Structures are given as structure tokens and as C-alpha cells.
Length: 380
Figure 1 (cartoon, rainbow, N blue to C red):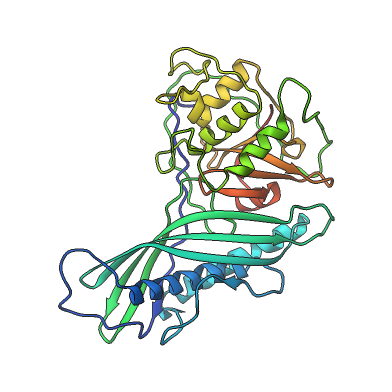
Figure 2 (figure 1 turned 120 degrees about the vertical axis):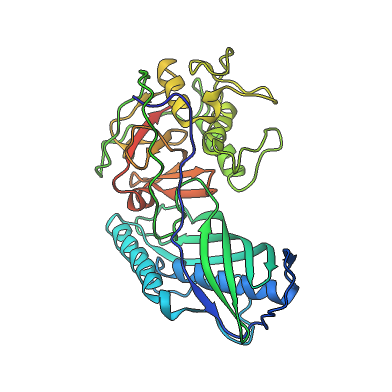
């Protein structure tokens, strides 16, 4: 049993503290209200964020240096503060352990490119708040030969910094602003908030095994009732952007399921009109939509009750156009929806999704990040 209303996943990144010496002078007489940081200050914050996030990415890459998207200028290089160095070291160690788990599953990254853009930086007295966007491309090593070329993701962070007398700024927190799964280089996932069961019965579906390998269940991608190739092409076209024909749900919850609903619609799923709150209906009309269009739970209930899809026994049976849902904290409520847009000959599905916008992330990587989650695999 699970609650009637949908909710987004509550996922946050590990808090890290970094100090950067001598970027610019801290003024005790700064204005009391928030002011836009000047160019030099903004660039310094960008270098700081780039350094921290690139270090995380580096922990996942096999023997090569990660390329940075920010220049390395400035009077002093960013460094982890002595007081929180142990926390940063633990974060890097956790990512190295994830790298080992991925290698055991046959996945290795041979290179990476991380770019950080400062979207906004404001300073209030001795404190600063900085919004940044990270875009990282990881290159798959050809272990089996037909892996995709890359996996990409775009994610937003908020940084808070405190000015220190003598010209230093100390980065107090760096927190993800996404509500989807952690990015590949985010070390720690915070459990989603537990939702109280409302006592009603719904078609919850059957959890899938995560044991590898699994007996393949291939399907015809085109020429049938649905065009699964078109679904995948749509998802890969709009993975980092938003189709202007649809309203944006980013930051409001529901964007991940909204995204797969768009892709399914592009591949031939037909709307079912009716009351928006009845999970047996599925539609979007430009100004409104059914709950099942945007709600992870409602989408599953619609899908199973209308026989649009059936549960697969194992997540590794997923093929192009199929859907994977995750209940990260095993509370009975589904948190996230993803679409398979590529499958290797070795039987590895690769997923594309919104909410922490991501392109061709392997199923192995999802499982390595959330080994204790409950997963539901749908043959669409």
C-alpha cells in the first residue's frame, strides 16, 4: 500500500567545506543587503566549485586526469579546510569504493570533462550564496565493446561561504538543488522522507530482482503498436533541455515522470481522458494534466491497471523504451522514473531521465549508488 498523492525524491549531496586563501579582501563594512558579486569574486567562487566537483569526478576515473572547465588562475588554489578535511576524504573514499563496485560489474570510465558555470553569486556582509551548474561528461571504457561513448549529466548546486578577515573565503556547504538520484560523482544519498500510508489499496506492482545476469527478453523496437526507438530518440533529444511544447516541472516535483510521459507519448501511447485525480486516466492538455502524467506512483497505477505495461522479473531484462522506477528508501512509495534509451549486447540497460538531468547512465551505476533500494521494471 502506498499514499495517493505523488511526491518527489528527497535527495541531497554531501556537505563539504573548503577554504580558499587570498582570493579577495573581506570587508567588515560590507553592505547589509545582498549584492551581486563582482566578476573577480564570481570567478573565484567558480574555480572553487570546479575544484571540489572535479575532485569527486576524478575519484571515478581510471588513471586519467579530469579536464576542468574553469581556468586555474587566482592567487591561491582552493583547498579543503583542515577542520573538515576528514569529511572530504571520506567523500572521495566512498566514490572510489563506488568505482570498484562498478568495475566488478564491468563498467569503467576512461576519462571525464567537468564544466562549472556560476549562475548567480551574491554577497551579504561576510556571507555569500552561490548558485552553480555542473555539466560533466564521463567516457565509457570499451570493456565489452559496445558500451555507449559517454554518459552525461547536468546538475545544480548551492554554495554558502563565509568571509574571513585577512582575505579568505571558506566554503561552508555545497548542496544539490535536484530532487532526483544523486549524480554519478555525488558521494552520499540522503534517504527520502518517509510517507505515511493512507490505508488505500493500489496496483503497486511487483519488485524486480537486481541479480546479474538475467535471461534477455528482447522486443521489436519499431513496427508494432508503439515505436520504442522514437521514445528513446525523444528522451535523448531533450535530456538536458525542455521541449517548449510542454510546461516545465523542474523544481516542483514530478519532472522525472513528466519526462517519461512525454517520451511515451512520442512513441505512440494514447491519452486516456477523465478526471485528473483518477489514476486510471493519463493525459496532458497544455494547461493541465492527470496526476498519472507527473506522479511516479500514479503513473505505475495507471500503467498496471490499464495494462499499458507489465512488470519484468529482473531489472536487467529492461530494453529500449522500458521504464525503471525506484523506491530509494523502501517505504512503499516510488520516488523516481527513468527510461532505457540504449541496451548493450552484454545486456546492460542505459537510462536517460530528468531530475538530475542525465544521459545514458548505466543500470550498474544506479544500483551501485542505491544498492538497497526497491526497483520496479516495466515492459512498455
